[in-house]
Length: 363
Image 1: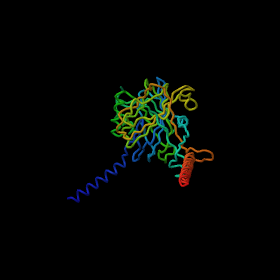
Image 2 (image 1 turned 45 degrees about the horizontal axis):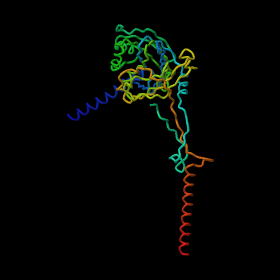
Image 3 (image 1 turned 180 degrees about the vertical axis):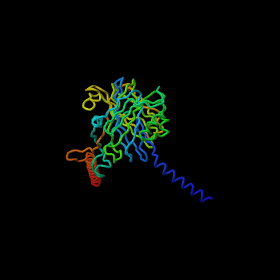
Image 4 (image 1 turned 30 degrees about the vertical axis):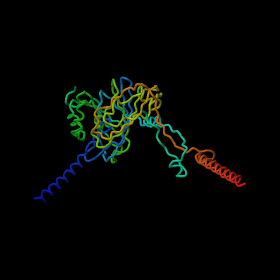
């Protein structure tokens, strides 16, 4: 009997393993949910997004860095109003990365450290101190277009089950848990952007940086949907650039680490940024990084608000160098050597003085 139970348990475990391999779990990303095709997996390592808000309209340009073996996937993003979708400009992210690049400075230290002679040679980089953001039950397709590798559908739905049906019709399975997480958006009357994506070469999996998408919708307050990231199996990383009239910040951490401001400053938009803002305009850029070590703790969406002051900030990376003079002679060595010479000279004077006094006594 014991052997029979053990055999049944082993068979059950093997069966569960095979079923798990066929039905891969969805991996959430920062502002939506990725649903891979059957028997495949996809994960989002990094999500970088640009949020522009002018007081009436919000635009989000997002780019995902993904891993896994999925050759196709679907992605869902809830939005508070009717959205338009188009391809984003990859140059936008290169331009922003250049703008927020840390300032590099050199500072000296007197005493040698681990990388200095006589211990070693060379310098090291250390970061400067961080700074102390209702419809019927059926799905209605309000728009559908092909954008590069993306098949984009803009949907309304009064029931998460309707979204599940739509995805299954299009070849993807919507996990039950995702339907539960979508319910708060359904209750608020939000709409959805559903994207079917595939690599440009069909025999290659979705990996690396995907083409960016640009989504625009009316909104009286800036919001960045994050609730669906509760489903993520591992830690999540979010990089957020916010363009507005003032410096912006998340109203709360929503269950993640404290958001870190990596740049804040006023600028005139040019190039890809000007295309996003409708021409060269004065705007305030805030760059925010945030980690979510335990995605299950995410309890809402990021609501962005203006800070009390438009205080500028730029990270500073210091290169540490030993204080030297002339041809690279360490100042500490000259100082110590000078002190030793002075001490030696004082010792000689004391010895001579003692000898003179001793000679005078004997005389």
